Every structure is written in C-alpha cells, then in structure tokens.
Image 1: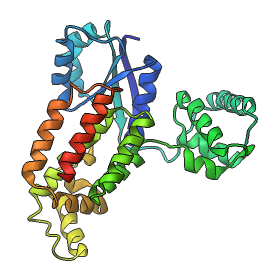
Image 2: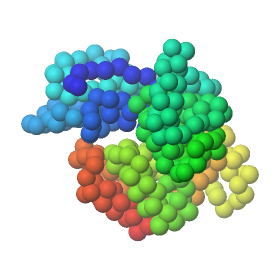
Image 3: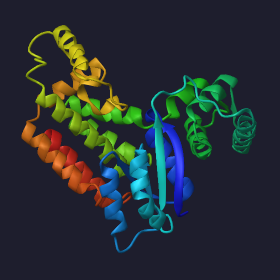
Image 4: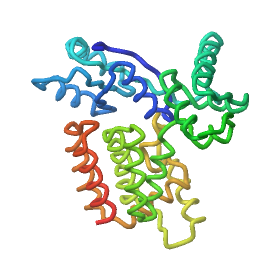
Length: 316
C-alpha cells in the first residue's frame, strides 16, 4: 500500500519489527533502510529512478524534524508510488513488552485456535514466554507453526520449546555472525549467513549490519595505538573506560561509536580489527556503500555477492 506511515520501535527488535511492518504493507516487500546522512541522498536516488517497484518499502530511521520538513515535497510525491515508513527508535525499552488487555484476549483466542487445529496444547508458562517474545500479531502464526513442527508427535508445547525455537529478534544471529567472524571461522560464518537468509532476513539487512560493523572496526583500528592489546585485558578495560570522557555529550545512538560500546564487545572488535589492515577495511567500506542501493532482496545473486564480500573482507 503506497503512502507515508509512522511507526515506533526499539533497537533490540529493529530487524524483526521492520520485516513485520513491511510484510503488512506488501506480500513480498523489497526493503530499503536509510538512516542519518543516507536519508536525503537515498530518497533522491530512489525518486530519480524511472521505474519504481510497487512493493518497495523505504524505512527512514530516526530522521530529524528539519530533514522531514525539507523532504516533504519529495515524500508527498513518493507516497503515491511506494510505501515510506518513518520509523522512530526509542532509546530505552520497557522491561517487559505487553499487548493491551483487549488485544491480549483476542490474541490468546487466536493462539488457542491455531493450537487446537493442530491438536496441540501449551502450558501457561510457555504461553507467557511466547507472548513476551512476540511483539507483533503478524508473527504469531508463523512462530506457532515453527513450534508445532518442532515438537512433532508430542501434544504439549513447553516453555523450553519456546525458548529454543521462538526468536525475539534476529539480533542474536547477527551477534553470532560477528563471533564467527571474530574467531576466523569461515565455515560457521557462511552457515550463519545462510541461516539468516533462510529464516527470511533480507540480504539488505545483513548488509546494513556489516556496514555498521566495518565502521566500528575502522574506528577501532584508528585508535589501536591508544588501546594496546599486547598488555593485559585488565589494562585494556581501564584505558577503554577513559575514552568515554572524551565526549562532551553522549550521542543518542551509542552503538555507532566505538568508545561508547560495552567493554567486552569493544575488546572483541579490537581483536578482529588487529587481524585486518586499515586499507582492507576502507576498501570493504567503499564496496559496501557502493553496493547499497543496488542491493535488492530475495535473489540468489544478492546472497552470492554478499557471501563473496564477507569471504573476501575477513578471510582474504
């Protein structure tokens, strides 16, 4: 459905949120995510295209008010051709997500109906965990069917089944991808990449994650002389904690700044950065940026190109 939409969400569930939103707008959406300085340039390139696919869904993440005002004529034009979602990401997430009481009653009926159709039951604890992990009604049936297939002939679905199968977001898989890259495990990296694609994550979203990862690696490389890993990790943590004081104010999205990451994550990035030359990282970043708007979801060529980029970048 063409138009401009406004949505809110959290960084921890960003990937699964935008996929669910896009699938509500189109049965087979092609997703483009634009953030920060990319918003104006990206929208300009999209609007200049001679042919715009109707199932294109463009997410503008945390755009500034003045940016929206400036782009208003362009957004008005695009709103008749494609779907544009202005997606605000909140800084802090509530300790536990809950649907409103009326929504929860309706959703419980839906869950019980699907379970009954397949001859299954679910324990109260399993249901509570399931509803905590599911943040969008659009994901309920898909995740329930995964659970039903997982338990096989067993009639009852238990809390352990939900913990094993139902994913709150793909963030854990992306972290696993980083861990495999960090350890130099080529086979595991490709396995995780394929799993992400099979589970429905578009190559463009993996690509966006890799861009952020490479940015952080370049930052780590450029300050590696300050954080010497030849000494103990304790000394690294001590020096690293002092870097935060260099910021006159803390930016909203700390995940984009190496000195503001968690110390353990920063240490892993520094170890990975030390294995790769600065020139190689900058070449990779240039390749990822040039690849950005050419990347389309769902074709075998996209996954092959992304896989080749990954192999060339981190494993030579």
